[in-house]
Structure formats: C-alpha cells, structure tokens
Length: 205
Ligand SMILES: O=C(O)CCC(=O)C(=O)O
Ligand SMILES: [Fe+2]
Image 1 (tube, rainbow, N blue to C red):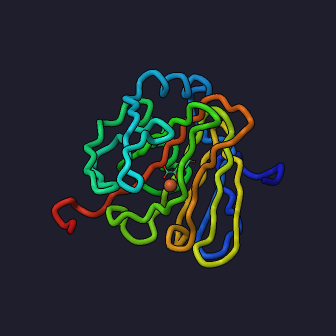
Image 2 (image 1 turned 30 degrees about the vertical axis):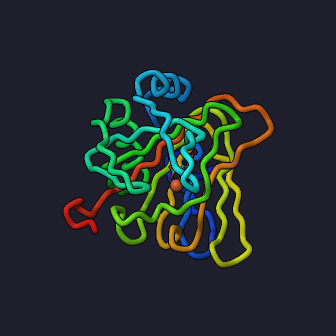
Image 3 (image 1 turned 135 degrees about the vertical axis):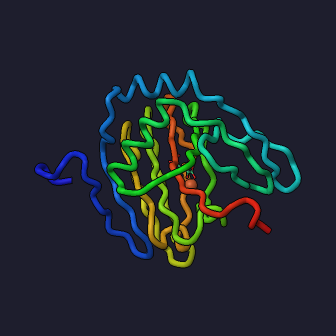
C-alpha cells in the first residue's frame, strides 16, 4: 500500500486467473482486540467432526455459521444462527468497503499454531458462479496460502489483525487456499468469511 492511499480503499493485488484485493484495516467503531474478545465469548463455537477415509476426526479448529441461508457442506445441511449485532456491524463495514452484499458468514477460530484449514476452493453450488468472498481476520497473524490448481504457482499472504481480503472473479475456479499448521507458537486467531448464498435449497440436487 502506498503512503497516500485512502485507508478505507481496497488495494487490488495482482494475481493470474482471479481477483484478490486487500485492506490492512477494516474501519470499525470498536478496537480489534475488543472484537476478538467479544467473538470468542459470544459466538456459538463448535468443534465439528469430519470423516477422512471413513474415520471420524475432530476438525483442527472451531467453527460457526451465522446468517440467513441454510448451507450444505460435506453432505450435511447447516442451519445458521441469526447474526449478532457485532456480526451485523462487521458485515456492514465489509459491504461498504467492497460495494458488495453478503447474507452469511462462516467463522473459524484457530486456537493456536496447531489449528489449520485444509486446501479447498469455496466453490459450493450455493455460492453461484465466481463468488465474491470477503475474509476478515482478528488476532494472531496467520499465513494464507493460495495454490494454483494446474500451474506450479503459490501465493502467500499474511492476514493481519483487522485486515480484509476479498476473493472474487474466477479465483475459486483456478486456485485452492488454506492455512497450514505452524511450528512457531501462535495465539488465537478468528477469521470471518462473508458469503452470498444465492441458490435456494429447494433447487439443490
Ligand atoms: O482462515 C482463513 O483465512 C481461511 C478461511 C477459509 O478459507 C474459509 O472459511 O473458507
Ligand atoms: Fe475458504
């Protein structure tokens, strides 16, 4: 970011086969550390079980869904909780900065350096073609890694406290992303991905 750029304007990050834009600090009325604490306390965090090669395993993080639309993920339908006033405030700030609308948010809590998120694309049918996904982070900095699906290209971004990353265009078609475990100790990090769920559940196969 250059010194004189508007502090509330997203900066496009050059990337092939998709769009990425970053803002170091989402403008909010509350300090980042207060947001982190409030999210830790008031979100209905769950330790979900997933099946890997038929074996039940705890997901290496806590998660929660909030918003207006049901969501299917790994063959299970989740009914989100209504957004809290804090989530609505963050959503409003994200919508202002990105000039896009969102109706759901997936929250992930990385308790320490051993928590992680496997490589995936956010390409579920509910999100429609070429979805815009706005990712807001609070707490410890973790490295967000993008790997191209066909080419030997990797992009690494440090997602710092209070930052906003917008993924858009064809990015989900061409790239996977994830957060690796790390050896360096890490305190808690909470990430929120705001999404627009467009496909009505009745139309789903
Ligand atoms: O924690 C992050 O930065 C990534 C989260 C993510 O990829 C997701 O929620 O789909
Ligand atoms: Fe994702």
